[in-house]
Length: 292
Image (cartoon, rainbow, N blue to C red; front, top):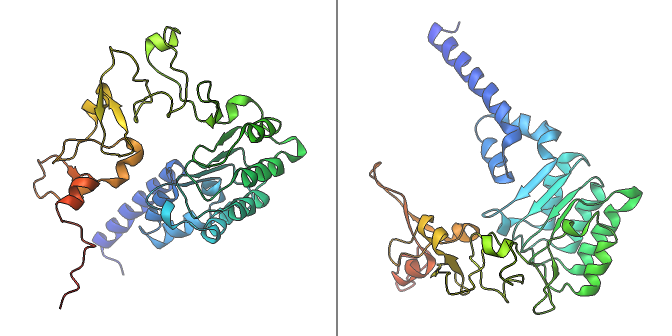
């Protein structure tokens, strides 16, 4: 016989479980889904068996570096051929073969977003897009910035399979005549066409966070901790968290490089060290003294 206290605890847990089931469809990435599977066995089974949760597949750092073709195929198969959105960010080990395997098993995909997946090739992307265009099906979104080797010929061929030119995030830069991503500028004067800042990241200096152009004497930029000569506009630099030593912030895309500092005082603000300061200070836990 269960005691009254045990029954109350069981009822309380049942209520919590019901709330968690409601939250599941709003989880953003695979990392969040996998984290939820550790809460309870029943929740793990619910995530595993609910096909609707797997119609959108999102892999982001820190899981990106671990994703292989076989793992991608295993997890995407949980959608039972109903996958609609495939987002792989900086998944360096994913190849054309792995992507094609997912596309062939899920012909209803409408969004492919693979920025920074340098293991893919233009030819592999084109084969996948061509495969998905069968039976009058067209992609709504194709983001391939960071997949190297695209030419004007590749771009022209892709346009024939896409619903519109705005579907793809690459275009021909009017300044260097290369196929690259050209971000939009949120500066008011640029929107009024008073500045000619239309160009790729290599041709026009831009804020690494908001992509606003940093051209002209009235613009002010600050150095970021990201490296690669990345800079930030003053507005973004002021609001982003900064390294406790060099006072440089990371942009959102590189925030995973932060080395968070454990805090013991609940009233203290979270702090971190950038990679440069972390290694310079000799606090790298992977540095092993092999002398006996």
